[in-house]
Image: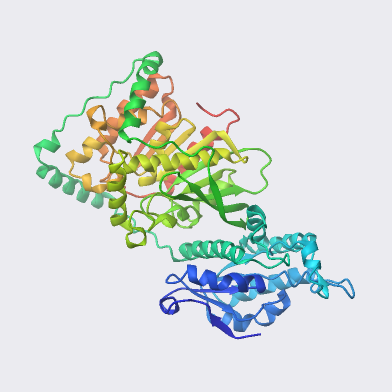
Length: 577
């Protein structure tokens, strides 16, 4: 076997500053490894053996030179296609299933014992029996054995807590035509590119999780409260009267359900118009499976959703293992930092365990879509890879304005595209869908619920904002360009948006020291929106909690309250409406 070689295509990718990714596998891996290196150039150094890794016993023999001495950050490894070979001479497998399982366990144990790398196992890709047999080799491979060995491997990996990258399922989903070569085992250039896309996506997700560093928790407690109040008073004093005293029409609270039935259509029309002239969404949803991982207790899929205007909405879908009937679902919407992947990152969203894994363990399907310029959508705006972050946001804002639509309107529309896809999944009970997020994700959640009644319950964390109060406190800068809509304050403030959620359950969880959500504005929203819920006889379905001496953050108490709210309203056999 050859010594490890760099398959990276650029000098930048060889930098010791970059994380190191090891790819271990057979001839299938040899086909996609250089393409993975090209896709991750500048992001990671990709290393793979120069020759075929062979069966699991051979991988185990060469583990020191191929993996351990490299001190990797990520190891994406496979064995199986050689293990399951059946000798035409004696009818025996090259490595029997029990030996295969033992070898895989030993590989995992040694890598974990000698490195701190994150591990991903890639299962064996399909074979076509007749085409393989036509090769005339001294051995056979059979599709039934591929499935059998993959089942054995999955059992080992689940017991070890290692995700299994379902390359077999990805090929089957795409269809082998155009992907599998004439021998029914190896891959065409198109097939190698398809596998490389999936592997690069899986590896990149592991790198994001491994490298994630949470933002600093804002100061809390009495001293923080005093400093906040002092700063607020200083800002208030310098806000010009034209902004401080801006006049916004009061939102009329209906006297009862009949009055609201008459009032609501006009409110909805005003809110929808404020988003701009939004194009119709693709129907039915146009989707593409990019990658799939079989994780302990659930399946994770990365999907790309065509939004029909300017590209794909990248999203993660988490489906609990063993569902017997359609399940409730959560649309989890990320904040301005970082992106959809945070749903599977531990020590975020108010708890040590990744929030997505908390949801799936409770029986929810979860969908987490990227917003514009975040995650996989970074560098896909009007200037392509030349722009990112605020520059890309600004260009997108300008572009959509030319066509009569707001960037925020396109945010909401994309989240509806994601919701369309979620509702198309057979695993989902479409009558029990919740929406939640923190900060920008909170605002995405309650705007989505306002314009789309498929959202049955909503929780907004750390962003419940009344726009005129941002002006009065000099905090317009607290939100990016994406946040703003056309003409809303000519009619009413955000109480009109939130009122559209009624009578569906809505919970807001906000810190009193959150400058982007002034507390006096929240109290005004509580009175008016709460009044709408009361008029509909649904007062218990609206709740707003202001946490004293707490800033713009997601606390464990907030996570507990959020989970309890969804358990209350989405788990019953008849969802609240």
